Length: 176
Image 1: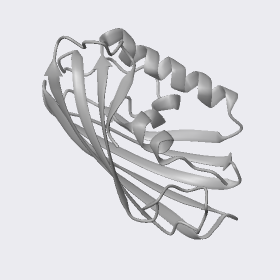
Image 2: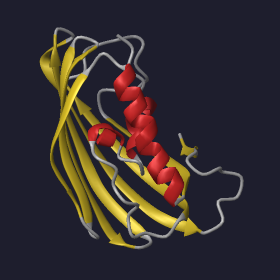
Image 3: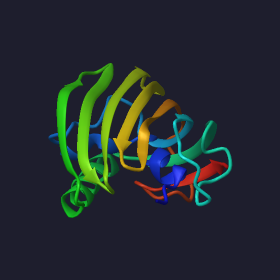
Image 4: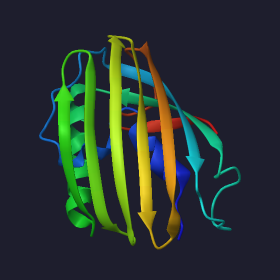
């Protein structure tokens, strides 16, 4: 089994990737433009796998810059919904709550590459220029008989209303 950590962590940065099944949420009350996000991913229970990047069993930090607009926020959800509909996983979302200060929800998926996944997301909108939160993921299945956990801590800050060369809805890795 091949899991790329960047593919797991990057969608969480600003679009809250697991929102695939959630009704369209309104763009958050934040400034639109260039944002920088730091995602610290901690993993435990990862089976040995030569296809995994070095350090996959511990902590990895990703720093990205993204261009967020009201349209890119909405398009991120449409894109996630399309990917979800095209996948073989059966997912359900519960406990959805959004207000001017936070977005939270739970998601359970089964049938995804032979394992079950439970996700809890909680993002706090600290101001119109900053947000933070965490995502907890638990996986079980034949490839993870002992279970696997992943916790991501996300901190995002507004940099500029000018996105420079980053197009709306795109992101650029800063580290690693």
